[in-house]
Length: 108
Length: 411
Image (cartoon, rainbow over all chains, first blue to last red; front, side):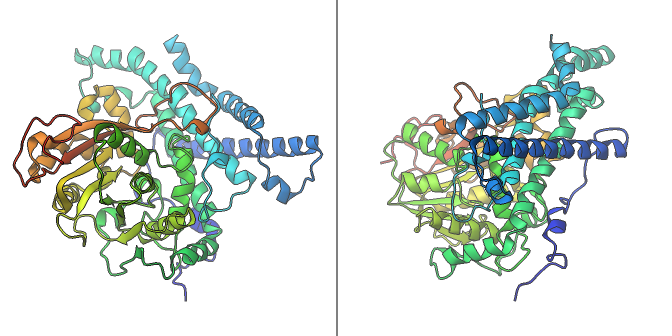
């Protein structure tokens, strides 16, 4: 018989457990820190959605059978991986421009 | 430069099954780490040099001289806060991603590990072992539950998450098998001790053994023992090694401060990125245990991040971020500890103690790129190392032993 934590039945809840220890705050408003956390994950999750769309487009372009299962098995060719990485990088640069532009301006 | 993709991770039977979005999530995390290293961190430096340090100097009549003063200068700077927010949240997201992937297949992974582990005489677990407080009570690098927690009997989840996510954390710099530290040690031995042929090799604090495997491959006739306190990592690591065709690597659940191995029975006793995760008390004991285990002519060597004394105040402050905000409570103290002095205090001859650098040969398939890897404050495939040779004849020192060289009387 397995010994289970009470919430084992729900792996999603288990995965969402926070690490022990004080969570640091980097702004002067705790809600702003939380908003930042949400924004970062939303940014990443949208990137993932965009990559999935990219996978579907490439599969349709090849005339592949497109289903949830075949998209999950999609593996880009090296040149496609490079294009997908560039797409992500440009996307992240756009989203985080407000944070990086500061350093460039000062460094410039 | 094309960043590494999780599609390049080395496949073995224990690796969690990942769909498109799981892979993409890890790849975005790797990209966020790249953004941190080559966009956000330079913005912090520019702000420090051009705004924060001059402002602090105007107030105090001199430049910031230590980490604490750099912290005062930078604490309210938007560039520093932004870098910290992205870094902390990327790490939390990485943990969530790896754990969600492993937890949703926890039984399948557990059962797969059992297929390799049940009945094997190379996996020795000790359910009675006292897990040291510095492991049991710390969720190191924000890993919920820490190394030793078990969600189900025979659990391997946090190990599977660790193995899956490390590639993204390192941006692929560890290579497909995340074994760059082990390969770096092998390369160091080949260069600095080409005649050294250890018959018994021990990895203290092996985790899932990803850095033990290169030693096993470099010295195929040696007995190789991987020791850790965390059963989930040993189960996972043992099964992982077996699934890769390595069936003579021993995994033992023991405390590295007092192992069951006989005194003088080992030729090479090493650690990789372990010392900064131990308490100061355990650090001394682990180094003493390594000394006890070594046979005449044996070597102990420990791969780590460099000590702070090598860096200016700004670099120290940035490198200390993990100690402040990544649940690495022993990080700062270790990097201020004179480990060579500790090694001497365990009984090694002063002339046999050395500091060196171990670098992994670049893994070509990592990217199609040429050129240097951007170092994200310590997350690069190159390590500071502290080591000591056991003299060949008791404690009698003969000859001139230097940095990174083998003792003249070792034969």
